[in-house]
Each structure stands twice: as C-alpha cells, then as structure tokens.
Amino acid sequence: MCEVLGMSVSTYYKYRHCEDPDYQDYLLIKNLFTKYKSVYGYRRITDELRHEYGLIMNHKKVLRIMKKYGIMAKYIKDIIPNYTKKYIEEQIQDDHLKRDFTQRGWVTDITYLTLKRHGRRAYLSTILDLETRDWIAYQISYRNDNQLVMDTLNKAINSPQTKDLNGLILHSDQGTQYLSTEYKTICESNGIIISHARKRNPLDNAVIESFHSILKKETLYNHDITSLDEYTQLVREWMMFYNTIRRRQTKK
Image (tube, rainbow, N blue to C red; front, side, top):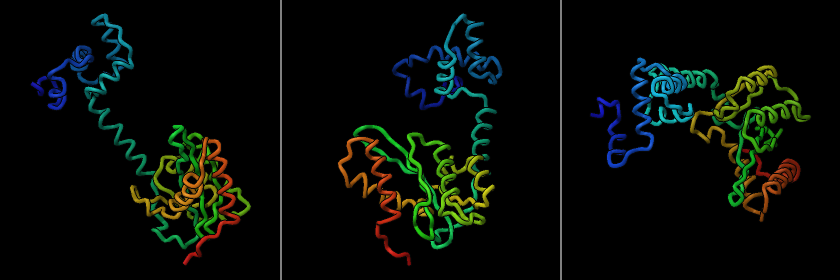
C-alpha cells in the first residue's frame, strides 16, 4: 500500500492511528503533482489547486506540505545539493599550516559572546599573529555575517602592525564567510594566501581556539556581568590588556 501511495513506511506508521491535518490537502497536491508528470513546483501546484478544485491555498502552505511529504521533482533533489556541495568544495583551500603554529602567518575565527540568562548574543571576530601571538584586529557585532569578517580583515590589513602581506598565510576554519568570493578577493589582492582547516578538526586552528577560550575564562567566567553591552565592553578592555600588559608563556 505504501508503494502505491508513494509513501514511506515510517510516514504510514506515524499517521495510521490519527489523521494528519494536512493529509487531505496532501492527497490533492500529490494527485496534481503526479498528473503533471511530477515536474511542477509549489507555485504551479498552487495555481492548479485554484484552477481544478477552486481551492485557494497560500503558496507557503503548499510548499510546507510538499516538503513535509517529500513531494519534489527528482531533478531538483539532484541539482540543489550537488551544486552547493560543488561550490563549497571549489572554495576550500589547502591547509598550509598543518598544525605548525611556529611559522609566519595569521589565524582567525569567530566566537560567541553569550549571556544565557538574557538570551542575547554577540559575535567576536579575531585575527591573531602567530609570531607575536598578539591580535592584529578584532571586531564585535550583533550579526554573524560576511561584514563582520570583512571588517576584521580590512582592519588587520590596515593595521600599523602590518608590514608585508605578500605570501602571508591567513588560516581559518571552513565557515561560510571564509569561503565567500569577497573574502577571497580581498586576500588575493593583498598577496595573502588563504588556508583552511579540515572540517571538524578544531585542533587545526588550535591557537585561535585557545585564545578565545582564555578570553571567556578571564571575562565571562570571572565577573558578575548583568548585560550584554557590559560584557562586550569588558571584552574590549580585556583585548587591550592582553596585547599590552598580560604576561604570557614563552613559545617553545
């Protein structure tokens, strides 16, 4: 029966004892989808519901039901994920550091600045120099977007500490911001070599991970903070303290 209806066994057992409120609409949508050679998307199905059954249904509801029951043209199922995967693979660069954090280069990452009791969150983007272990640039934002990363990168490039960028390695994880065309363009136009850590390998970017961990221990977990604004201000003060005063262990 499941094969005839084009329904998975799990879906059958889920709804066999109670009727899903979308089920009758699903049958109409499924019938139209099959009738038109299984190529219509949700907008055309919405039009056909109105034309054939006189049923006016919001296109967003049609889309939700089609997603819920897996009603989608095969070519869409095949093309969308493959295109996304191919794009990501094309943007990923080699890991030029290979966990050798003693060489010349920068490392970068984004971390959350969160106060759980307030339910609010900010984001800290940092670029750290491997030779000095000082931060070269940082940016705090309430949005985790491309602009956050680009602002940090441009600050680093224009920093008084920055001398020669040609051939400098800039290492990050495979976050979407670090795979963007804008990020690639800025780096390449300044002679910076992009390096990406392997997926799900935080140790590939251990220096910046450790830096952000220390920051949280010495700010969030060491003070009675009452607001997110207070926390972000404390982070700014700590960043200056880190680069100018805080004693650090000597690299070996």
